[in-house]
View (cartoon, helix red, strand yellow):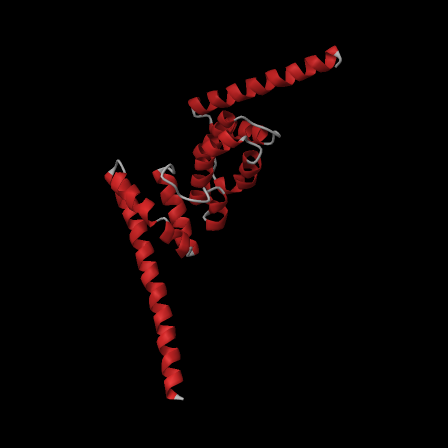
Length: 195
């Protein structure tokens, strides 16, 4: 490698660090316009660290007037994160898609495939609500013990209330679905007996 190429690479690395530090500073100072302009530039890089991705996310969440318009840029920047950083960033992506995009399928793209005991309570709530909207009754039924446990162990009464409300909506939906199935079966039997 030529010495000049080495200097250029070092210069780019230094510029990258300066921009990342600038973004953190803009966020601390509440400088929205500057934060968003820099976040847009940084998110277009081919690879980011988890910390830088989080700073960009925070800038969008805090200052963007139309956060939904950032979905593609955030999604593209999320993909190349390494597995550990993606796991940490996943929560932010779940919250972003649940809050601003409001498309359950898109939100579930960032969700864990399965709710487990190690899944965070807020993640459980977000995933459960998406499954409810999509009427994924099998997944919900399989997660009942974990949801019950989450309700029981939630540290704050408000979180217990959110979880219990989502849990109750599952049972209401289940009763509604089963009632419709019973009605169809009854109508079918009546038609069969009438003939």
